[in-house]
Length: 77
Length: 77
Image 1: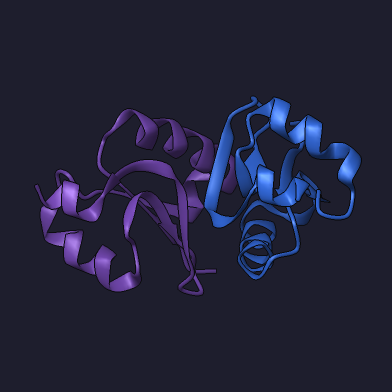
Image 2: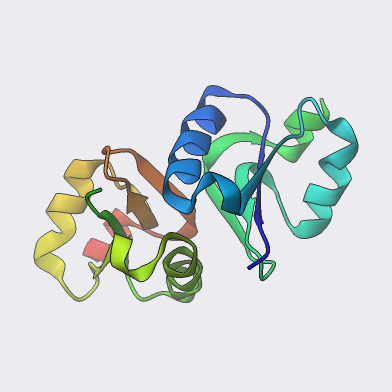
């Protein structure tokens, strides 16, 4: 199985969701990307369908928006 | 580890998220509850902090609202 990608931006809602998702899915099954820091991956996230963070893109390409921390526009600043 | 509980109401957004979550977390680690059908569990979901479905309550009690299908008020109808 290929990995899921969990996109976040370091916000409190993001960090809480990250802990839960890593716990549930398993650390080895998810790549965690902070697009607030790794800004050259914002486009990739948006292209995958991510509209807000935290969000997880599953191996089959579905986007799960998990709670609401910030919009992509907010992350771009 | 105790199970997570995934609450949904049979809506298309719910069903899609359910498939993804069951795939990612593992069928044996999550109880799936359709509160549109099992209406006597709506109160339990709301008490746990669920504001809309689909949502998952983790073993430690955190609520992950995953995308948006319907509000609890919509489910109550």
